[in-house]
Length: 266
Ligand SMILES: [Cu+2]
Image (tube, rainbow, N blue to C red):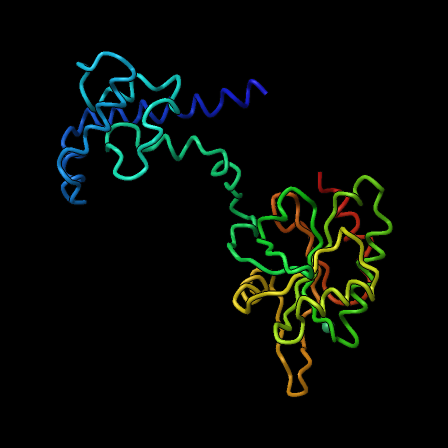
């Protein structure tokens, strides 16, 4: 706990020192940026107020916040959201935010894709919301008469053979590419028909979200004249970071391998 509390402080301190060095070497940068933004004269007062609170108003203006606020960055300039003084504490506001740390996805993470879907209860689900769990991901459409039902049956079999602890962690995610017919209600009905428990997430897109995800997974689909879809049969297993660790292709076999790949997700 203490270790993780100290880390952001140390990072902030490093950022502040870096900012201080930049400000010291290019003293006019702040002023010219202000001019470019047409900041009214006089707003630098905020800067003074910030520095005054940390005593010694005589300190050089660019150096002031960097030097004073390192141990306690939040205390300096907390309430200057609009035209904050340039050289004085602009960056720490960003690095202080723990959210920005958690959204540092790995280079291979699918969760970098900023797309959102709607689940079968109408709730918005961003792809990144799946982070932290092993995920079995399959694209499908609810009225499919052959391949998709078989795949769901296979996924249920995989779910059943997982040890209890892992079963409680793993999410089974079905994303429909039938954006016209697979409404929230249709997905909810599908859940009931197939007796899919709370570990299952049923999603429908906006069209671009579905297409982008399919492209990333390597899933191809195409609506035929009769309204049905021809599509790849590709089950993807993601680790907790959203990286692809396994793909099962086709409709036959591969259950053991998929289950083993899931088991290997720590
Ligand atoms: Cu299908």
